[in-house]
Image (cartoon, rainbow, N blue to C red; front, side, top):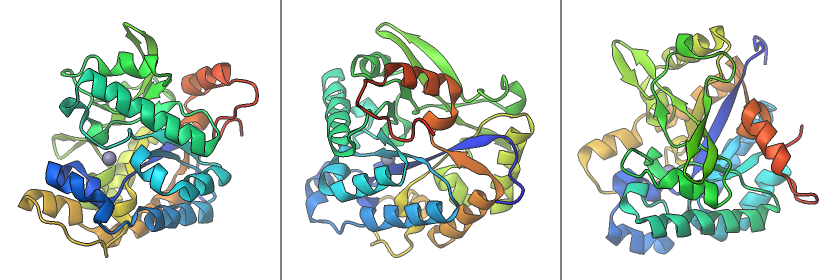
Length: 299
Ligand SMILES: [Zn+2]
């Protein structure tokens, strides 16, 4: 863990099957989900192994659909001390759902995950970061359904604009009450503002560029929010038919991700949201019911 310094960054994974990604979404494929080869459990367990090796815990935003089919996976993650959060139930873009469908989706997912983990689930991340100006009802619904923080929005901020350690989080007032928004950072690269370096951008950029970006954050004491998917460390996943650009993006550098993640874990210190983002941690601890734990709190 060598050169790690004071700042601990957020490490998160969106747990879904390789065939559930939005880039390859079609209603016809949705009907086939139960017949396609499942690879999410083995890939997520591999991630957990890498994390254990680096003595690191993370936040796992998990689909309710996946949790129902792999209950042992949820229990394993809980046992290892990771935070269980919600990626919704069926991975339909928020913008494609009605308010009613969205409420049902986030409610169902929370219930499934809480039943399996025996802990309070307080975080939510939308499929493909699809909470936007066109879905103003989404955050109030999350508040009403008992979520304490959301992490679905890329925020255009530079480290220098951050207010220091807590720069990645802000409290948002909604018609249903406040919720914390944990923003995914964007970085300025070659004059382009990119949502970097999580997911596809982590696979696209050379590792040295990703490291440079996280260092920029770290220099100002700002926390960085990193995200990846289990399928991103699986170069052997079956190839799907879809738009050429989607295929290019989805299958790019899958072979390199695992090694890059190992480097990242070596170069920086990471932890789950509820452990290290102080306003969220405070709020979560004030809400914990006696006898009900929250994954990863307190350390
Ligand atoms: Zn997703």
